[in-house]
Every structure is written in structure tokens, then in C-alpha cells.
Length: 623
Image 1 (cartoon, rainbow, N blue to C red):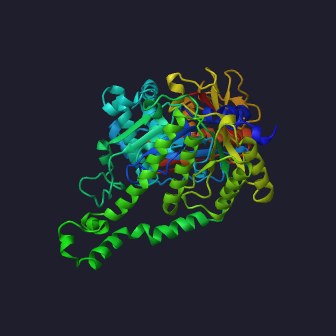
Image 2: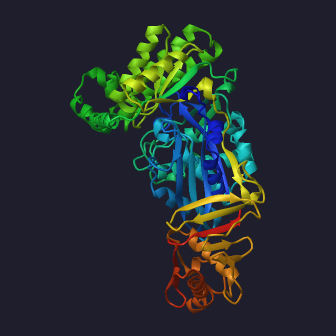
Image 3: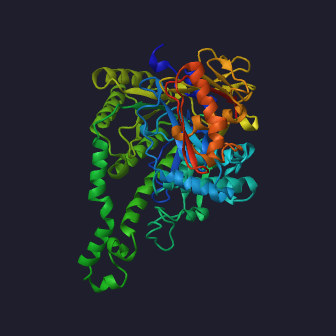
């Protein structure tokens, strides 16, 4: 099959890579997912409160919550990402740029929400069907916060499902139990984003993540200016660094486009996403250059103008000043006015998109829409859409190809702060399909072999589902990748590699394994043979302790973090009944030393395990 005709969506990826999904779902008790999306506009809401218009794509991002050893700690686990240029999932080459401060915030959040510090430690595993650095948004922070609230019973699965179906008016009215739970999740996620990613969160991606919608989603907020550290009276801070509690009273608004006008279920245009390969860093250099020259100096410019133009005519004192002078006395006014001006380009996109839905076969409606796209690119280019020379070349070739065949097209660059991200090409159905395929083939052969199409609307369809609880095993919710009654098998190889799988009850094999830790039957096998009570006098406790050590970060735990047992309070008792007998049995049967150490005082000690050099499997119930 021609790679251009091969579907790229969730269903297709699950069919092509079932083992990736099986492994991911086998490792996590709770799995939440949501659709990947892009914006028709240039991310206005987080800067000024302006309009954002989100469109769901047929891809999803997944966050799994996995119990770790110990208490009171949250951390990032494994990340698997599908790279459409390479046609495979990989844990390499994807950087989230998440700050540790986000996990510190989450830990403090849970202490306050649960009223205790000894909550079970967990890690968050990620499975992403599109990497965020191509200009698409998976809103991982939303999924992590939803996963936290579900795992620790702050939110029920049925609550989350009800949220995704809420009518826009119900959310705007702020009434009802489910609406209040939704608003709490929204506000808490906003706080998390400011700690994880950047201080300028608006909540637009959260809204797009959560809500079910086949239609584009429109989002905007109250007026914003300044920051929580230098707040302008009468405005909600555009940047929130420390006073995240401000988001508890943050006003935002969102609705499905179909709430405004009656829409068909299909987006009225063909849309293709072209990944342009990877440039040489020019986009970031150009962005930073413009930001250094202009973006950081609006206050300086404001002060300068106030000084130079302080001497004026009598008419100035009567309120007939030029506009730039009127704004001098308003705090942070120059940047605010500049951003407000940019905001109106998004309103034109909104108007033209509505007209397009009403008159989708109209050439004039399409021309007005693509003209609005081009105006937006031009207006916002210095601060958000500055393309690299690589992207400029590809965009120029797109327009040239369209002109050659007499088909008008529109282009939306998704390079907002990213390295040569995707280029969206809009055309009337189905006028540019073969031509775009020919152009991409040409670009691959003569410009950059990494260029490819990572989404085509007629081939892949559109997304519509919002936030979903894919799996919650301890609550009896199983994904299609997990059979009820199955068990989770975690395997540590002699080289130190770890992998997980799901096995059917009764299908467990111990042959060839040095150690089998069976939490289902509370037994240990060494060299494929079961152990007697004489060999391991405290076998049940040993099973739980070995599992805790294997899953703990660094395979090291303080005695107070070990599974509760009468043997963990005193070092002598612990060594005499747990570690000593196991080390001796391993030496006897396998003829090698198990590196299981106990260090510290009689009542204050740590236990560590080095599993390398051993083939170890742990089998446990799912959930």
C-alpha cells in the first residue's frame, strides 16, 4: 500500500501496533485518554483572553497511573511516542520540557486534598499517538490531573463521563454537582500547567481535551494583563507564577461551534498536515531575536514615550492626545494594546469559519476563510509564527503548485514556539488531493526525505471524543487489551531490562527464571522450584517486600516505607526472617549471591536490592 493511502489514526495504530498498547495497558491500573487537537487561531486566550478555536484530530494521548513502592511521591515514568516519519513508537527523541516543580505541586495538592502525607506513590506513564513538538496538542497536564483525581478517589469515572457531555450553557451557568466537579478539575489543571510548563495558562486546551465534540470548540477568557507578581488592578494576571489560587475565581467561556449555528457533522474542507522535516534552529533564533528586540521592551518604550513627549500643546491637556500618549499612564498598556490588536485576527477566523459551514460549496466563503488565515499568519508572525527558511520553501512550493493547477488553498502554520512544526493545508473538497500527494513526493525526493503527510482529513477522519477513562482495573473497568481474570507479569532480565505483559490465569511458566515472586498465591520460586516454610519461614511477607523493592525507584526503601509487617520494625528481626533466608536459599540453589542489603540502626534502616544478573519475574493481580 502507498504510504500516502495508509491511515494514520487511533484505530489504525492499534491495529498495527497491538503489542505497544497491550504492554502499556498491562502496566497501569488507571488509564485516561483524550483527543489530540490543533488551533485554527494563534493561541490568543493564554496571552490576552482572546478567541481560540480548537479542532479535534483522530489521535489520542494516554496517561497511565502505576503504583510505585513507597509513599508520598509522584514522578514521571516511561514515555512512548508514535513518530509518523519513522512509522513506529519510540521512547527516544521526545522531550516534554516538564519542570519538577509540577510534581512538587501535585504532591502538596494531594496532601491537602487527602489530609495525609502517606498516600501511595505512583508514576505516570505516557503513550502519545502524536508528539507535541509538531504543533499538535495532547494536553498531558489535563490527563495527569484527571488521572490523579481518579486514582485517589477525588473523582469517579462516571463523573468524568458526565463532564464530557455537559452542554455549554450548563458550564457557563456554573450550576450543578457535575459542573462544579468540572470547574474544580479545570482550575486545578490550570494551576498544574503553570508549575509544569509555563506561567501563562488559559485553560483552552483543557476545555478542548475534556469535551466531546465533532464541531470546533471556541474558548476565551476574561481580560488579562500583568502578572501575579506585578498585578494590574482590574485585570486577571496574564502570567501566574506563585498565586495559583487565583485560578479558583478565573472566568472563562467555551462552547461548541454547533451551539452558535447549525452545522453538518463534517468539517467543510479537506485538511492535510505536512510535517516539514527538521530545520536548523532558525525558527527559535528568529523568535528569540524579535522577542529580545521588541517583546521584552514594551515597558521601556512606554517610559521613553512619556519622557520625550511630556511637553505638549494646550490641546493635549484637554484630552486630545495622540493614542500612544493616552496609554502612557496605564500600567503595562503598550504590550496589552499590541496583543489586543492581534486578537482581532482570530475574530475574523471565527466569522469566516461560520460562513464556511453555512456555505461550504461557496468559492467566495472559502476565499474569505483562507484570506483570514493568511492575514493571521502575517499579523502574528513576529511573535508566534516566524517560519524557518525550510518552512518558507515548503509553503512557497504549496502555493506554486496550487497556482499551477488553478486551485486556491489556505495555509496555517503550527510553528508556535516549536521547531519546524506541521503545516496545515486547507482546500475545497476534493480539489487538491492528488496534487498535494504529488507535491509531497517531489519534496521528499528533491528537498528532504523526512517530509511526510501525518494527517489527511478524508483518509483519517476527525476526532470527537473528549476525556475517557480507558481502564480502571481496581474498579472493574478493563480496556479491550486486558482480559478479566488475567494477571500482570513484570519481568527483570539479567541485563537489567524491564518489561511487562499480561498472562492468563494458569498460563504462568517459571522455567528458566531465577526468581518468581507470585503475589497471587503469596509464594516464591527459586530456580523453578517452590520453597518450603523451613527454607523461607516468612514467605508471605517476603513476597510483598520483594515486590516493593523491585518497583521502588532505585530499588531502595526505608523500613518505614516497606509493606506493613511485624518484621520491618527491627533490623535483626528483618534480617533473620526475611533477607537472610532468601539470600541463603538463592546461594544454595543458584550458586550466586543476591545483592540484598540492609543498612542502618536497629529501628532506622534501609533495604536495597540490585536485581542485575538475575532473571526475576513478579506476577500479581491486575489493579
